[in-house]
Image (cartoon, rainbow, N blue to C red; front, side):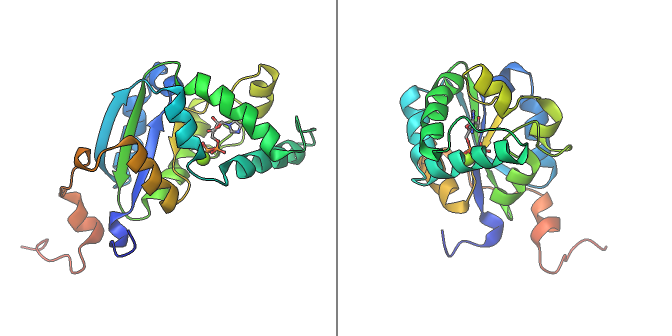
Length: 203
Ligand code: ADP
Ligand code: MG
């Protein structure tokens, strides 16, 4: 991974069951595709609770970080978080995620290109749709919030999962895809995105 050219960075995306149900598969793929990223792996299936647990606990810090993010979000809005203990919050979230993420078919994808992880997170938007920026997928296509999900005892429905770091991406890709399910190929547009000298444009 370390000696790979930066244009070969990879990230892992799940279109969650609500994204599939909302007929957003094409819209989502269009957005990642149009920025210049390359789709190198794609599958459809129904996830098991075991895979969802493995997926979210790949990063040993995820329980703490997600709990802390939730607490900070409540406090920014002047609201009292459901608990002051980040791990306690995330245990409930993980249980609810298992129900949410296994409720219907999902699309899993690997996207490759310069800054794939950061670019996909930027287009995807922040975790809570209420506060995701306008113009992001989560900001434009869904209206859920922590208050909504806590009131009803469920996970936040935000259409997508996207890896948070390059290390997380590599581990998630290895969990969901076999190496021979990923395809190495070139696209025409990579010349204009990455070629050093841009030879061959002028006749
Ligand atoms: P992201 O998907 O933006 O990387 P996290 O990794 O922190 O966010 O959380 C994973 C998923 O768990 C979120 O996308 C969301 O569906 C759900 N989630 C996170 N925090 C909460 C919460 N406090 N309440 C309900 N669901 C949550
Ligand atoms: Mg995450």
